[in-house]
Structure formats: C-alpha cells, structure tokens
Length: 334
Length: 119
Length: 174
Image (cartoon, rainbow over all chains, first blue to last red):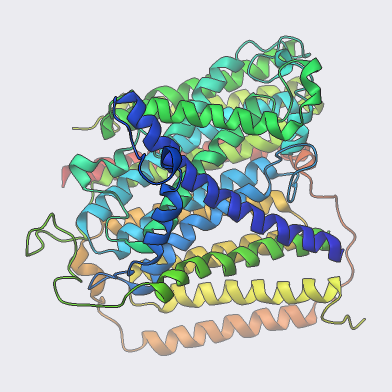
C-alpha cells in the first residue's frame, strides 16, 4: 500500500517533469522546424544547435514580474494558468507508455482524458474574462467555441474504437492491437473486425486533435494579426509559462491518445522488432505525430473562424455519426 | 476500491499543490513594481484603452454552446452502449440507430434552417 | 470501528470530508459572489466536488460523465449565457422585495429541517451493492431494462435542439 502510494507520488512528479521537459524542447523543435521550413536558422546561438535556449527561456520567465492588470479579477487571473495546467498533467497520469510504465491505469481511462481535456476550456474562459482586455475576451470565446465544436466529433470517433475493443481501459485497448502493424486500429486487416472505415476515423480524430490543441491551421484563438496574442495577452512570466506548458502538454496528450487508439501504442510495427522495449516505440510514434503537427503548422495558412466552425458542425459531426453507425453495423453483420 | 480512491485522490490533491508552487516561483524571483500605465490593459501601444472588455457577443456562440451540450450528452450516452454492444444483439443496435437518427434529424434541421450560417 | 488517521480507511474518510468541504465551499462561492465570473468558478468547483462524490460512490463512469458534461459543457454554456447579457445590467441588482429575505430564510430553514428529519428517521442499513458499477453493466441495463428511458432521452435532446434554435432566431430579430 505505502509502496504504491510512493510509486504514485513518484509518477506524478515524473509526469510534471515530462510535461515541462516536453514543453521546453517542443518549443525548441518547433522553432528549429519553422526555421528549416522557412529557410532561416532558428535559435542557434545558445549552446550546440541552440539546445540551451529552452532552459534559459524558462529562467527568464521565472525572473519576470507577474503583472496583474488594473481592473482584473486577481484571484481568477492567477488561478486560470494553474487551472489550464492541471487537467493536462492529470491526463498524463493515466496514459500507458508501455506495458509496465503507467502511473495509474483506470478502466474509464479514455473518458477521463476527455473529461479533463474538456474542463481545460473553462481555464481559457477564466483567463480571458479576468484579464479585462477585449482581445483576451474575444480570443477566449473563439478558442472555447472551437474547442467545444471539435470535441464532439472527437468523442464520437473515439466510440468506434470502443466498439471494436469493447473497453475504455487504455491498456486493454493497446493490448488488443498486437502484434503487428496490420492489427493496429488504423488498418485492422488481420483482426476479427475487418473494419475498413478505421482510416476515416483516424483522419477525423487527427483533425480534431489539431483543432482541440489550437494548432495551426486551426489556431484562430491566437491569430496574431487580429487578436495580438490570444487569451493570454495580459499574462507575463510564469503565468504565460504555465499556459505555454499546458498547450504543449496538450499536444503531447493528443498524440499519445492518437497513438494509443489508432497506432498500436507500445507495439512494434512488426513482431520480430519486439526486442526493442515498448516505451521506445511509443515515444517514437508520438514524436513522429508531433513532428507532423509542427510540419502542418508551418505549411498551411490559417483558416477563418467561420470555416473552422462550419467544418466541424456541417461536415465532421454528421460524417462521424454516419461512420459510427456503419462501424456498428459492420460489427453486427460480421 | 479504497486503495484506488486514495491513489486517485493523492494524484488530484498532489497536483493541486504542486502546480501553484510553479506559479509562486515567479512571485519569489520576479521584481515587483507598479504604475498606472503598467497596469493598463494592452491596446497595441495606444495610451487609452478603446472599447469595453465585456462586450456583448453574438447569440450564435450561445447556440453553439447549447448544441455542444446536447451532443456531448448524446456522445456520453453512446459510450456504455459501445462497451456492451457485443452482448446486446440486434435490438441494442437498432435502438442506437433510432437514437442517432433522431439527433441527426435535429442537426440537419438546424443546418437547413441556416442558423449556423455565419454572416 | 475507529480507524486511525493514517490507515487507508482513515485517509479515505479524510479525503471524503475534504471532498464535501470543496463541494459546499463551491456552492457558497456560487451563491454569494458579487461577480458572475466568480459565481461560475464556484459552480465549477462544486461540480468537481460532486464528481468526486460519485467516484466515492463506486461509479467512476458517472464521475467522469459529471466532469465531462457539467464542468466541460454546462459551465461553458452558462458562461456564454452570461456574456450574452448586457454588461451594464450584470452589476446592478434587480428590484428586491423587502419580504424576500425573510421568506427565503424561512423556505431554506423548512427545507433543511425536513431533510434533516428524513435523514434522521431513515434506517440506514448496509445495502448490498447492486452491481460493480462498471460501464458494461450500465450499457446493458440502459439498452435492455431501461430502453424506453434511453429513447426518451433522445427525444428530449431533440426537443432541446429545437428550443435552442428558437432562442437563437429570437435573438437575431432584436
């Protein structure tokens, strides 16, 4: 009992450290990748390849003053960044990185990640609302209406996975996807279900992940040319730092979830590659997905808020509902 | 179950303590200064803030929120169904077909009425 | 019978009391704060506390549902509704009847006394667990024993879609 308790505390600390490290170095990777794509070097002064840039940025953020604008709601203003970080870390706790590495597996793990992810939108609203700044307010409303619009197709598409696996336990979902690439849920040719609709589910889910994490081309909440910075415009120092960390932590969680649901989690693509530990495969898959995120961000221009909301309400939601019905029908017929 | 409860709660309350500490770091290390101009809301360098922060928003955002609420509830109802579909047989499947078709009717009605057409 | 504070049971009891404290504190914030934003924040804290109580009642699925729907959707909807209101009106109070204070107090007191009487009179036996609260059992029962309720839910949701539509169209004319 006490040993498990220690394990859990250890896992929580590791989860925060993992989130912070990922946030720091994803920013670096993002800026380097952006540089690559736009034919400029990106950060390259501090340390080899600019690798010291993120910790120095962190130190700088810590040494700044947290200015609270006049007329702002002080308590909510300070609470909002904490509230945005909280669900992100909470979700890390239930993600299985391999058969052995999971802080706290739950049998409603999938729903738990969705629940905490959806409560993150309240943090955005509080941030925008308490700042007393019209840009922050507009951005918060935009971000939240975008987040809620894309949460529905995401939830509905995830149901197709639950249909195929019959469970919401993330570890069990991964276990059923062994041992080779053709057992993964994205293209399950060798499993019993022969479901050829899964690539569509994957596409819908991946699009929703992009939109849920406020990533370009769906980053309407922080359209710099219209809204200056976004809902965190009045935030400096660690308040901004926490929002930033939460954003990147959400990206990591989105890729983890996509990997677990569709890409076989810790399973290697071919059975004879099993000598490499599962966690290596898992991390490889999520970083490939994150690289795709960065690639997409610097390749596509930003859409409009109308196009964004219409894509979800008029296209993705009806399609995902039909997709769900067809998947269930296929499962029942075969 | 009680062990499970303790573990979950430790995670929950542990995080509730640790994350504010990160915020506190700034208060410890950062400088503290103030001033009228410094505490103004940001307005692209213009001296006086133009417009109110709490303006009225389009009623469409509210409609979107309500629609989201409805479809969220719908999606959550589908999860138990999805988990137990294998045991339910054809009747369970047909029930869900009716459920989804009813809501899809609602969505199509909303789309046809053009409420979600912006501008 | 009297578990020590540092045993697992004592810890669970402590956490349970903490959860109740959070729920009640959230409710009080929601009722008593001057600013609507803080009221919504308090409501959110209250919802999370209720979710945790469901978790204590051996139903993690309902707990997650509570967080997903109430914190993620209802609180957002309420916030958007507040944003729709005229900003000048939100800080003003409406006309308050002189009798509303005493009447409110009497109603609340009667309700409290009634609930307390019911709680004290009931024989709280150790009820056997109906089932293990797993999602599978919820799903099976929802679609067999309670299938009528399930279909009625979809009709209620359909009606609320139409209701939302009516509200939005009214708003457009004005």
